[in-house]
Length: 389
Image (cartoon, rainbow, N blue to C red; front, side, top):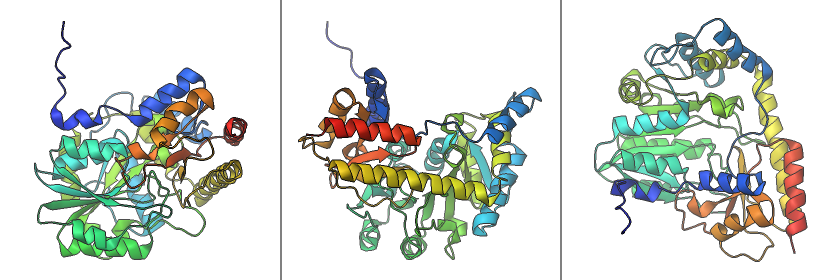
């Protein structure tokens, strides 16, 4: 009997494989330390977790919350944007709460893209971007970021824009490379958007995870960009509670109205008690956000030094949960082959950058997640060291 035909629509078949799910599955099967998927292995702050428990106990959010998000969280998002960046956002009309940043991005693409529109994206990119653009029937246009520093090539951005371009999708701090775009780079991208009347989706979920002096610059702070930028945020990344899946989009009312229209037909509403907890979390003092940043910076330094000592060449990471490297000392010359081999033979799982945005310019690069407890990183480095020739 012949195998049944693949029922998946053609435009989504390239997305059938999720490298993140695949590597996490291999890690579980082999008992490997998962330095591939970007989730912390520690719970987030106790006071935020207690706020969720309190909301559940008091019956706040146990039934459907408002589809655009509870007023308390929308106000907290607006207050956060004003407090940290002096960005004015209308909490009633300029914020929509979503099931994680993933839904915010997907809702935005579906809301704004017609069939045949083009979306300019910096490559390598998080795999959701490609899937979302294809779901919307649009076309993805790559602008490669090259190792070791992964800086955006502004001339390449300008050349990528055509009369079919609708959106530039910017992610800074950048997953998977750890690059943080400078103010001059953001301003140059912004000028291209303004010159061509484009919308910018600015994925800023790692906004508080910038390191050293590489401070995050929100796109909406560039003069002229607040009215054409949808900013994506995430409570999961901000508070190390990724399983709660609460994110948001903020921006001008007319753009957010479009996102809300689509979002209400996806998950409709979710995470009621967690919304109350994140509203509380956004009010935490600056010391919390500074402590999170410095803690992740320390873990980056620990993993960087350890990998370098073992024989990897590590690229600079200026933000996010991630750093990248070459293939190290194991004698395997293909990133995908090495990533598939490592869980069983080394006891550590990583992501091959080849599969993060189909990046042909960086086929021999690995992405490592350092958002793990220090003992986890130390044990992973010990396993890597023992397996090295």
